[in-house]
Length: 247
Image 1 (cartoon, helix red, strand yellow):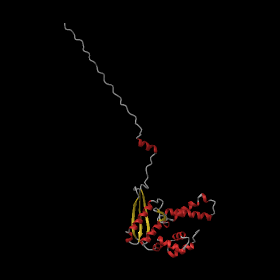
Image 2 (tube, one colour; image 1 turned 180 degrees about the vertical axis):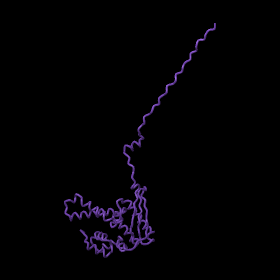
Image 3 (tube, rainbow, N blue to C red; image 1 turned 90 degrees about the vertical axis):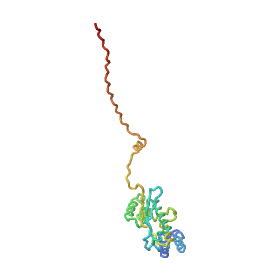
Image 4 (cartoon, rainbow, N blue to C red; image 1 turned 135 degrees about the vertical axis):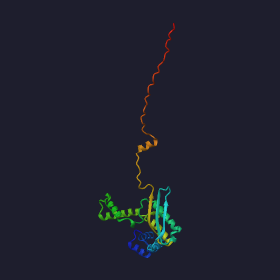
């Protein structure tokens, strides 16, 4: 199907309570068939997830993950509605998967696009508007191109918009919705921190020549100081004198 109208997307959204992007994708996957699209959303667990998003999620856990080699570490808080679900193995597995995703996504800085400060988007817009490849384009076309580039950049910063590392066919947001459908509660990724070994520490810069010299043990030799030998005192040879004859 060439395109999906906004009216059709809204109709499916009103019917299923799923997100706009999920509805659009469902309609694209089913060639605009409303019933098939609804079934597609149910199979993905997205319909029930949308209805639970308004419920308060204040339980859950803070999960830690240390990447192999100990050079990258992650802390992530994921919330659910009850302590029971927070202790469930499927919930813990979700937390592990999300933490691994964060460790593997060094450019990700925010949980979702809505968390990104407005000034970052404005900064990106000013950069894109000044690019040479847009110089000869009409303003209305230029605006569309710039907005598309900004949206792409903001998605690169958003955790939930990343393709899931274990299944590139779904995003992290869809992974969470699958867990919502399975566990029956509202689940939200609240915040995270990434730690990289040595990050922010100023390292001493050593020139290549100095490094080679240090490794090979080459150092400037100090000149040797020769000690002057003191002349030995001359020994006087004593010759025996002649004895006088007695008369």
